[in-house]
Amino acid sequence: MKNFFYASLIVLALGASFGCARVKPWERETLADPIMQPDYNKEEKAVREHFLGTREGSNGSFGVSGGGCGCN
Image 1 (spheres, rainbow, N blue to C red):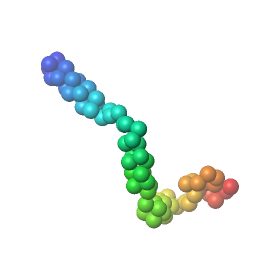
Image 2: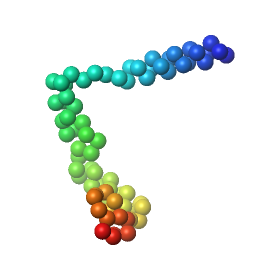
Image 3: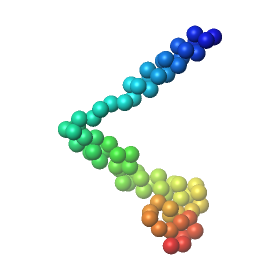
Image 4: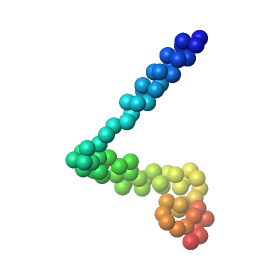
């Protein structure tokens, strides 16, 4: 049982270490592309916010001011 624990711990540590990567300065341009952003598609974002507002029964809270009640 101890061997299984240590083996799984080693595998977990190795798996976590593969997630780290160094980004070269000339590669940052590619990563800064708007398509790499989670909300790059403005139309899709607007539709998702509309569905969220419909499900939650409130609008707002996506901008700087205002809340679900319509207050500023």
